[in-house]
Image 1 (cartoon, rainbow, N blue to C red):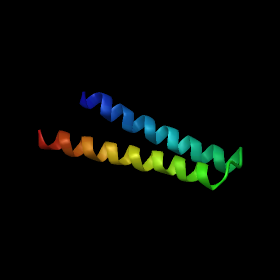
Image 2 (tube, rainbow, N blue to C red; image 1 turned 120 degrees about the vertical axis):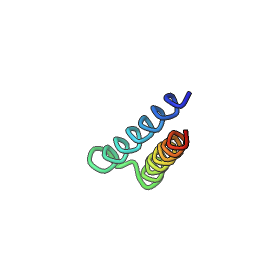
Image 3 (cartoon, one colour; image 1 turned 30 degrees about the vertical axis):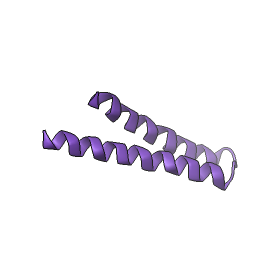
Length: 58
């Protein structure tokens, strides 16, 4: 179960980073898209932090 959560954190980071780069250099989707992809990045980082803390306790 922890591996699935850990992988989902990386997936969220990849989606967020690629979305921000595409929004900046390829398309101009606007501020709402930038905030959405930044939220993906924050959620991915938070997921990885929680899983790292949980694995360190064990």
